[in-house]
Structure formats: structure tokens, C-alpha cells
Amino acid sequence: MDNSLCTPEILAAFGLPPQSDVSPLYGGHINDTFVAQSTAGSPRYTLQRINRFVFPSPEDITENMTGVTSFLREKIAARGGDPDRETLSVRPAADGKFLYIDKEGNPWRCLGYIENATSHETPETLAMLEEAGRAFGDFQCLLSGYPAHTLHEIIPNFHNTPARFAQLLEAVKNDKAGRAGEVGPELEFAYKREKACALLADLLEKGELPLRVTHNDTKMSNILLDDVTGKAVCVIDLDTVMPGLCAFDFGDSIRAGAATAAEDETDLSKVKFDLERYQAYARGFLSAAGDILTKRELETLPDGAILMTLEVGLRFLADYLNGDVYFRTARPSHNLDRARNQFRLVEEMEAAREEMGRVIQEMMG
Ligand code: GN1
Ligand code: MG
Image 1 (cartoon, rainbow, N blue to C red):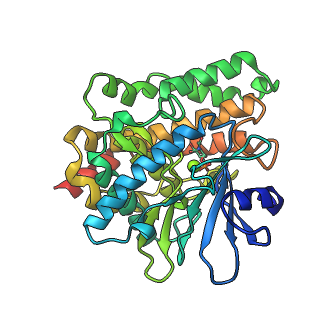
Image 2: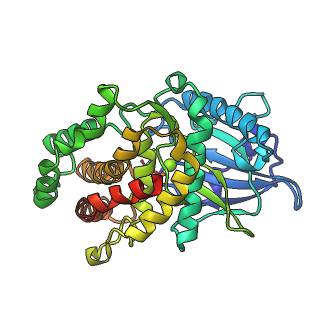
């Protein structure tokens, strides 16, 4: 990614002069993000080009985002917090709209840049994980009064694991990149877990779990930690805020946060599930959200960890078969490496399922 994407056209659309200082912010697999500042000392802004292939309805994202952040702002102000720092602020473009569509048809948005706080790719300490847990738990808790059903479903069936399984079958059938012959063991791994995929979807359908406002991409890097205190400041990346299950958010955090290696590590002997990290995250999460969760929700948190890991593994594998059209890749085997890695982590988590449940039970006393 280079700065040239963030052209004077984009700067002007958000009321910034063409000579503004622009630098890229790396991190996500999907959008392109830049920080812009008109002159030294003036406020900085985050400019994001939204990936219109992944997000065909950016207007819906904007509606979800403005709805949820204005609700959060009120809650944060009411408890004496700083709404400009503790949630994202969506800034209108010069024409008053929250989205600017550039000459090539790409949607852009502008957010206030949160100073003196940093997104960390991986949790380096248990304290960081606990903070991430607290922040996502707090997000869940603050939004428990928000009417989840009014949110747009940005990516239909995003965490519908059986639907993700079906997408993998479809990718095998089409074999667009001619790679299906290479992935026999990975497919066998996935096929063995077809039934398991339905666990959370079934409970939701039976009405045994409440539909909540969920973030749906709850990794460490989607939290900003204060540069001085190390405390969680703000939950970011609200693109996939949708109605969902608490176990999705908890589980997706554990997927990345309790793993001992990055999701694309190719030395699978390094990919372990770390119970101590799980405990640290759970402690933070439950300290903020424990009281609002039902008994049934608490019981499903470990299943969320297993299913979110399995699910993204299915997605990486399907994308490999489709010719790497969804996730950004840096090498031809990248998606396959990611799928293998996530499947290894699933095995590790399956072996630790009981312990994971016990940790939650003990914490909830
Ligand atoms: C994508 O773009 P990023 O890194 O925030 C993906 C998540 C996956 C994640 C895997 C909209 O998130 O669902 O868990 O990659 N987001 C979307 O690293 O598909
Ligand atoms: Mg994301």
C-alpha cells in the first residue's frame, strides 16, 4: 500500500489541504487506512478506503457505525468518560455526508485520530490480553441496551459456521484455481467437523441464546491501548458490527489471543493454545460483561473459541481454492498456510475444551 491512494481529491473531500502530511496505517487485511494532518500540531484524522468488494453496502456500515457510536458516546459521557477518546468519532465530509465516493467508485470515510494510544498486532503480555478482554466485554455490556435487530447485517451469515462450511464445499466443487487436489488432508479435517459447525447456529435458532450487538472481529489489534498506562482506551474497526452471539466475540478473541503463534505461522509445532492467556482474556471480559450474560451464554464461550477458529480456517481454505480473492496474501500458499495453522489450533482447543469451561465456571463463582 502506498500513500498515492490517498490523493488530494480525498483530502479535499474531507476538508483537508492537498499538502497535508499523509502516512499509511498498516494492519487489516481488508481496508486501506491512512493518517492525515494538515499542518504540524493540528488535529490528525484517520482516512479509510473501504474495500467495496468485501463491503458492497458501505452506506449500511455507516448507519450501523453512527448508530452504535452515538449510543456509546452517551453511555460513556454518562459514566464520566471521554467519548472522543473511548469510541470512534465519524467525521462528515465537506458535503456533510459520512461517506465520500471517489472518482473510481471507492468509498472513503474519516474518523478522528485517537492520540497517545496504539493498536498492537499481538498481545505481548497477559495484562494486555486482560485489557483487551475488558474492552470487548465493556463494548458488549454498554451495547446491551441497543436494539440489535435494527442493525444491518453487513456481511450476511458472517459467523454462520454451517454457511461457511457450505461455502467451502462450493469452492471445492468449482475448484476455480485448480488447487483442490492439493488439500486432501485439510478437507478431511473440515469434513469431520461438519456437525460441530452447527452448535451455536442451532442454539440461536432454538432461541436459547440472546441476539446481541457484536463486533465480530475482536482481535488484539482492534483495541487501542493507552501509550502511558497500558489501559484499553477504545474498540476500533466497527465495519462488522452486526447482530450476533456473545460467543462469537469472545471466541474470535481467543482464537488470536490465546494462540502462541501468528495465524500464518508455518511451523505448526509453534501453534499452541495457551490456557494462561485464555484465562487472562476471560478475566478481563467477564469483569466487564459477566453480569449481563446468561448462564447458557457463559457455557457456550469455549465453543465460540473452537468454532471461530474452525470457521476462519474454513474461510482461508475456501479462499485458497477460489484463487485468493478475499484475504490479502503475500505469497501463493498464504491462505493454505493460514488454514493449516488454524486447524492445528482447533485441535489444541478441542483438547482443552473442558478446562476452558472450568475457567469460566470458577470465575463466575
Ligand atoms: C479479516 O481485515 P481484518 O484483518 O480486520 C476478516 C476477519 C478475519 C480476519 C483474519 C471483514 O479481518 O473476519 O477473522 O481477517 N474480516 C472480514 O485475520 O472478513
Ligand atoms: Mg476487521
